[in-house]
Length: 307
Image (cartoon, rainbow, N blue to C red; front, side, top):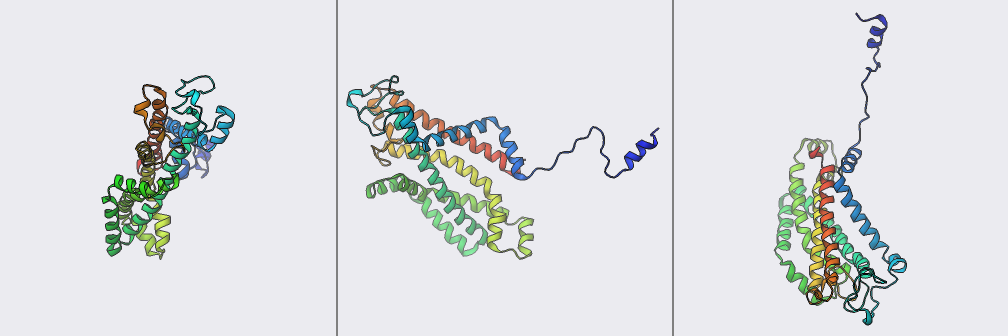
């Protein structure tokens, strides 16, 4: 039998049930951040990429404090020195400090990758959203342009550009992005075609929302998971492309260091010093792996369809 005091407590509108806990509703971004933090492997990969980025930004500081060498400093009396002593990771065929060149090379390699991804995503997203949203003749025109770009053999374009211009980090990034934005445009267009037919888009359009507001405030957030995946995978792919072009002599030219051109003539110097191959190759491998793992973690955390 329930006593009067207990009955009064149950009848109160704001009475709390004993033992029950209330949890405030989280926003989309807070909830996504919690899911990302719970992915320890993904967070570790993101921290590793952040460390590499900080090392690249602070390359002059590391040269002055840690290695005490400049990347172009040549010492022919110290060629192919093994790791240890004043050269922590040894020297190359010209006696240049390997660690110093790896630190400065991170600036070039990561800078080219990030700039290429930024340009590719910006151009590809704009083209894909306009094609998917407006449709009609504009869609046909833009998609034929994308088909033309994707039909150009990338290696021939890289060779032509390297002959006409001396590649710099900025020009090399623009050359790679001039080919890569087409794939992003196709991905974005397909997602926009799917999202724009949903009820909330039709309802927003019926109350008089402008086209630009629809694209930026409603379509773009729903396309964001696709862009995140494209960006994460793109960073790794561009690092490999940049390294391959440098190795072939079509990218950044010495004495400017990059992880790719540090592998130039590696097959000739392999038996003199295995470290000249192992260190830049290991950095390329770890960076590409970390970018892919972190990109997948972001996709799993921020994609509302995976909740």
